[in-house]
Image 1 (cartoon, rainbow, N blue to C red):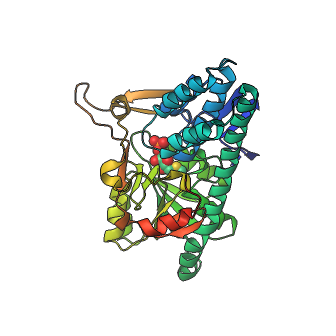
Image 2: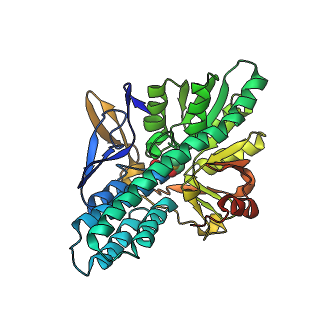
Image 3: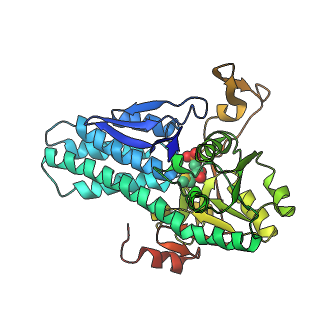
Length: 367
Ligand code: MRU
């Protein structure tokens, strides 16, 4: 995707020992590149949300494993060092399954190689391949999601299709295209009139800060709304469809995504509006069936609720918005039961959110 007209992706290799990412903590106020040189840097970047969004977290973790190999000692212990690095990286954030998937993929691919140099090269190849695969996954999600928007556009006879999205499941959360945004960019690029309602997504405001910024960079008409506005807009006929992403979807199609997603699904059902979830298969956790009770929900720092961050006279500043001593709770994600989801939009096509259909998606591929 483009930033100020220049093509960018969210993560790339600079040289043998440096991976670079866009620092999402300072967008849209500043555009800054952040260097990752060690697995510790990657852990910090994921935990502190320099990088965020399920597919990007996965790819960053895969490069984290490569960086662990770069710094591992060329002796018999490198396999143990790599396993330790894997456990450490997995502990950075609990909800997005792409993180564990990427770490386990590295361990699985490297297990049969004893030579350190060979394993290090293989590790880079695994990370590069995952990066390429996730880009292609998102491109295909865009292709498969496009007809859903096109169908509504035909009915609306030239009036814009109003799509509501939550958080940032855009290209910043991935490597390119995004998941929820991929069908939107695809439709926009093909000349379909779209307009996106962007939930601001408290407390970190990924919608207001990131989704709005990337849609603006691409020229897609959009409006930022407070998180509580979606229900009203749905009642008034101002929303045609909802598309969100997912950090982890269970084997029967329960969808974990940024806190607040579930409320949008409830409102969509009440108003007979289609609620779609766009995600790559790497965000489906086939080891978990009952997503509502089994998907781990991240609880983040209280300060993310107590303080709000914004731009003031050239400075990024934080101000407190609660009484100093009021207790706060910061649950990062919620789980939307499969019943509320009209379809999953994946790189393999549309899929009903149920166990049998999800199994079919994987075919023999497994994970
Ligand atoms: O806490 P975040 O910003 O990492 O949460 C991200 C989301 O909830 C996204 O919607 C999700 O990862 C889907 S990403 C394409």
